Length: 239
Length: 239
Image (cartoon, rainbow over all chains, first blue to last red; front, side, top):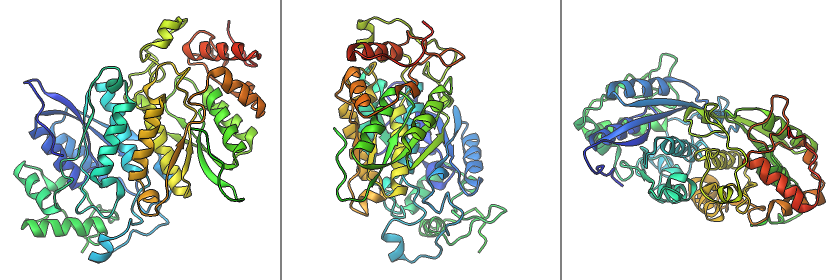
């Protein structure tokens, strides 16, 4: 599902979900490369730390996007994830078998559905039909809401949900341009497009100074991606 | 799509979206009648007034539900609706043709999608597969996200989105028990189940003391419903 070049010469508006991580930073670069006028959306959702949001702001500023909004939502209200509940430990140093199988405790219930729903609301108020999300089905840590069939189902629902689609006759498209790429391919493509990965934050469980732990699933996938791409990861790790 | 009786003798948990209006109060009564252990969810979403939320709290208390949570989300961040933007006027005294056609300015972009997404997250943390929403396709003011095809599409998406469905093999069901009922039928059924409609709030544009305006789309549909049911509406109207 690559982002398609907008028709005509005037830029087409798109909503880009920007977490502050490597994937969403690359997605934003792809969207800009494809000519979209990018309206970024991040979430303050009760994360255990704010380094990710700080990263999102820096990435949006560096990209000079049209608009960047931060929606405050309380996912911690429900609990159920190590990413929003400080009493749950973030798993470390899981091996390939563990990484490849099962939905981990870092899964936040219905998170991408909530994020895409807000993106849909934002798109509708912009009269925009394109939404981009940096999910990745290969190196994805086993989250169900990172798979192509989920993205397709969300788009089908969105086209029945909105005035934009049902009354104005427009087609809402959810683009997941990274979905079939490996982490190494994502990094390679991002570097070609000039993404400054030093601005991105990936770690689930950073030190107080923001350095990445190096051992959670997200750090492991990122480090392996840089190694496979033959590139140096510019961020600092605790070890 | 009536709510189905849960199997077995122990109560099955369900998430019930509770706005504080007539429809959601009736949906809650139906869910309780069907034997569900009800976990209610309301939203503080930047409404122009809080009478609706106060009503939701009273309805939940009166019903003695297991759990009632209020999620704070900022839909006003995007604007685009008379329900969240004080600079837009709530339409009054629209005639039948106007009520029957077109999506009105009171439509909040992607609102039910956002509400159902949060309900899905809540359900998943409860290990519950049933979600109830009081949408109504007949007297619905023209909102696209109140139609059966939309509800079905959301459920299909939900079953691809969640650990509960994809890993645990459960089927998530979104019940919209009022969807094919007229407002009069809803009121009749609610009264049979003992719903105290004096606790509900329907008006889009109430007076400062909470009295309903009597002339917005929601008031018109409510008043007509009570009249057609041959019942007296117990709430106060400005005129």
